[in-house]
Image: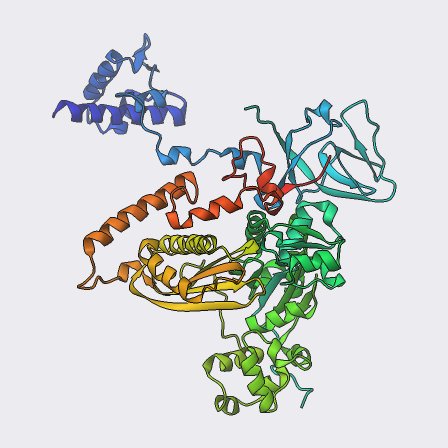
Length: 197
Length: 435
């Protein structure tokens, strides 16, 4: 048997042992080791243990029972670094988000709006900032909304108390608004974008 | 004979037609809420009304009217340059919403679509009318534009339904009620029946869509060809035209037209406009791997009189280099020195696939190969650095005039966000609201 094949065989045996350890929570006995690895005699199993001990995969206590060392850390075993890093395969990028996807939940109902006032400065929304507004969402308490109150558009916190809606600024210069005649919610602010350069 | 229904089947199929109301003007009102409820028209840059909001229509503004006339007669109308980028985003979003309800969506035009709803009653546990209502509500909530919806058994009938009540209508025509809607409908209002056909039908005593639908097939076959018999079937509730969900990949012809203001008699400038349109049309043809065997050029004079000429090309191609000499010759034949022109139009027709193209014995294969390389490079450059990075010298004069006409450029292209360029903007509409 050539060296490469022997290494492969050893790796598959280590894998079998580690799977046993992970599922049972203990190391196998020598007879269990035989059936796990396909070895026919305990003597062969003893030799395997000796070899794995040398390579640091496991250890034995004073009674000869096996103690796991590197055995349960499957990542180290399988991901042995050969040379450099593997190139990022497409599959690795499947579970990543683009900034668009991260910022926008509903692409067909999301709009951009440039803020001009400072009534939400306390919430970190400054003049010239861009806000992303989703008009498919129902506003909840604490949401920042774009609303039309008695004909005027505004950006404020949405607060509903006892069936009455209040629009609350994040700036002590302004007073909360209680719509007199008409309130239309244009949409809920889902993100703020500020580009510095 | 009027009373009995055309079919006793209520819903063998359910086709929905959605038609956005005054689409371009509605998009402007959606992104500029201060324009809602006000008369708005678009098309400033072309000098004629491309779309008029319902408020403008109520005043008497019509599509195709000149902007000058609108200004003179209705000074209160807000006149805007067209912002096709925003309209296209709204259009895509509308189709996207429709696909949430059914996978079978046909994008019929920028503001119209057909949706096959057959069988979806069970999924949504409601009637076809209620599904239509939900679609309408969703579009109005998320896009802030109004649409008219028609639902019936066939495409032809669903179009009649959506037109029945506009704007903002929702009309459902089940099989048993088709005859009620066709009774009063003049035959020329039916989709696919043109003025010549309706004139012929009038002569044989058919004035309304119902009279047409009630005739026997044998009788109609004596006068009409197959496409009209298909319309007859559709009017009777038998679906012939399927909802075509394939995105458009082939074209019968490609046309490019551009209006310039003010109208001019400058030969060099008009020719450069023509050349630019030709470059554009060829670019589109190359994108779909098509070649054209026939060229049509049309010049529109300031009084909207059109003169055109048709030219057979020596070889099917999509290279302006080969077509330009023909275009110039055609231009010389129709251009008159003392006339003012407002638009040039180029049509490439008799299109075929580039891959099926056979070189003839007399073609200069080396030259064709070289041209192929050049235009591949031009297309690559356009993709990377923007359209017209490299263009034909014959189109150069287009540049010179168009600079500085700020009022004709939509706001979206002027007030760029940090990081946006004149060529590329974020693909999200901006709400023009001061908060």
